[in-house]
Length: 398
Image (cartoon, rainbow, N blue to C red; front, side, top):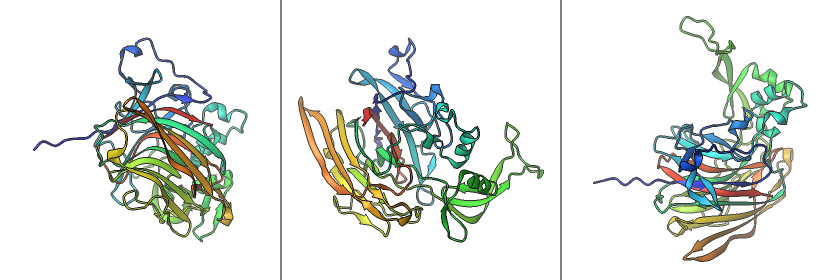
């Protein structure tokens, strides 16, 4: 029996935004139908170089293979090539939420910093931000806490995409402050940058857990050094420190278990409890019936059977969000949020408009100092290795 392999392909193009740099195609690019975009940026730890900024408003994160993110001249949106995202079966490179789980990523981030964002600041600001993994907090694309904002983007899902995929194609991400820590004695406090530098001398953080910082030794017992001559360190025993690391995306559009879903998450705890996996299941959770824990809420704002989701056409989503206002250290809800979503597409030559989330009061956001930023592409979760490929385009926020 032959096995059928379903491939998910997402196409994306264009930004309506202020741009620092605009990528200009070379003269030969028009003759190519797929042009790989292979530059990647770790937005938490590094600033973006000019050649890494795509169309003046994006940087790419995740899988580095040539097929992962490509400019697609086969599928245009408003006269511009879209972006094609693809993960094959063996492209998961990240550890999942549970033991022995994996996940994969090939996305664009609207938030990043450049060297210009550090001009005029003390000379050690960038180095400290790298160590604290807060480089992107200095950059563009951040929606402030408690703000209201309108978003728009378009997605093209091919009819060849399998209904058994597990992928997020658009997400709004929180921006955890990694100077917020819990001491081995259980005290939660915010460190200054200099205090975090002192902690970094003795502690390595993996995700949210702190470990003893030990020099890495070679077989002869000599300290290992990197290419620049700096000592290399490795994690020893857990030392009881915890650091703020974030959690589930406050808002996600995706496919899972044979459903298209829109999910809103909220966390009012000042230092996120990573062991609290409050997370609504699109298959089982009714619409607008939050799954809750002491501090968290997870709500399926909308869902549609995958079979009914429009295929082989551009679908434009228009979203309005009033982000929930939180009480910071008090860990309270000061003001609930609101979510409104419309989707437009063409069906048999006629325009279809559906108001799928109608100004619903909802808990949506994270209790952080900084706010949120947008990403789209493929974020393959749930330990899935099903091939994924689709296109995205037409992003704007205001």
